[in-house]
Structure formats: C-alpha cells, structure tokens
Image 1: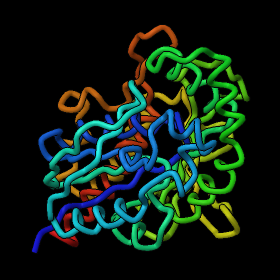
Image 2: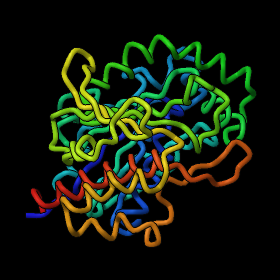
Image 3: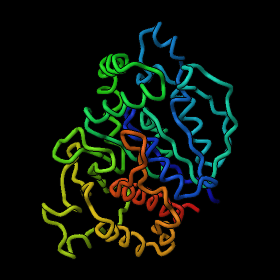
Image 4: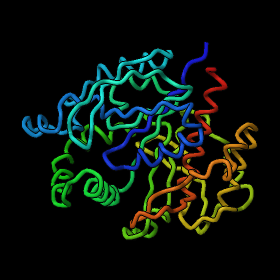
Length: 312
C-alpha cells in the first residue's frame, strides 16, 4: 500500500531550513507536498515563555508527544488536526486539518528528539551552518520579518545557547545528510549566493555513486567540487564539497550522475522546468542563484524519489 514519503529538515533557528525546503517543494510539485513546521507544537506562546523563563528550544516547551503521534499518523497516510503557532503574533491560532500529500516535509527544531519521531522519516537532514553565519541570518530575519531589534535578537541568541548545545545540536547524529553552508575563506561578509556547501553523506541511506567525480580527475584541493572521506561525530562518512564559485558545467557533472542513476530524474535536473532551484535572497532583497544550494536540493530530492521506488 502506498504511503507518503517523509523528509525531516532539522536545525537551529535561522539555520536555513525554510530556504532549503522551498526549492525541494517546488521541484517535487507544490500540489504533491505537505509542509509542516514543528514550531506549531509549542506548548507555550511567546508571552508565557517569557513569564516562565523557558526557550522554544527546550523539549518541555513543546508537545513532542503529539508531534510524534502526528508523524506516525502521517506515515500511514492518515490526516491530522495540526496546531498552529504564529511567529508574527507569538500566539496560537485555530488548528488546521491536514491530509498528507505524496510527500511530507517536516521542518523545525526538535524533529529528531525522540526515537519514535525519528522512525517516521524516510530521509533525515540536519542543517549546521557556522554559528557566526547563523547569528547573522537570524538577526536579518527577525529584524526584517518579526519586528525585533538587533539587540533583542542577539540577547535571545545568548539566552538560547545552552538549550541549543544540549538539545538541538546533538540531533546531528541522527541525520542521513548534514548540510553546512559556509563562507569561503571565512569571509563572513560574503553574500549568500556565493557560499560554499559541505555535505556529510552518512551510509544510513544509499547515496548516488559520486566516485565519478574522482574518475574524471576533478577532485584536487583546488577544484570547486570535491569528494573525500572523513569522520563525523566519530563515524566514517563521505563528504561532498561544492564551492560557491563553481560553474554550472561543474555542477552539472554531479547532476548527471544522479539523473543517469534514475532516468525519470531528468525532468528534475532540467533548470528550465525548475527555475526555483538554488534561488536565494541577497542582502538587499534581490534574488541570487546558488549552485551549491541547487545541488543540495537536488540530492535531497533524489533520495525522496528513490524512497518512492521502495515504498510506493
């Protein structure tokens, strides 16, 4: 019996979850995708959190049992009555009836915090940008979209740090793919469109055979696309790195590897059909093209479509 394919995207606040999710949903087709943010499972509203002295990152501040139950229902194709939390007002709205589509994308802070929740995902992604870059992204988002001052955002980051260290970052160990966008040469002023990406590919799911990158002799330290071996949290992993200055031709090499592995991926690799791939907002609001982001979105999409061959 067919069931939804479920993708988890977990990371700290302003780690880039929504940007990554948007492109994946566009490629899979918005009509096929159900998007859910686990912030909706907060136990307390913004004022209550301030009164109690608890952050949204703490497990006790979230109805993880209900989130876990809903994930189990979605996995079997059943509908849920999802709570709704508004970041604009900091309060709760009426719950929403959700019937899962062909694909379900769950993004948020604590998506891998329980064993039962982790078992519900087909693909698990963790976002781990350098902390200075994440802080920059959070200041920009919260001042422009949520009405905070820069001082308030920085104070909140400091307040949340103990919970980030204790509850958010340890979830990295449960992911199949760790995504880290970072500025070249530690240049924190580099625009989002030219960030490099480092993809930790764990052997928990079968990845495309990227050794073709080595075979074509394009894997030296100066190359814009590199494949290597490393250890992450003590375990051996493959690491794929793509620099922000990589050309479309260089990135196409990797895309062709995936498309040849799964012929019906060819439409997904067609940029004319999927213009949203790798699109990101610049510092002044302009739209930029990031090939590292596009490639990351394609690799994750590859795994979701691969899962449909097994379960649907």
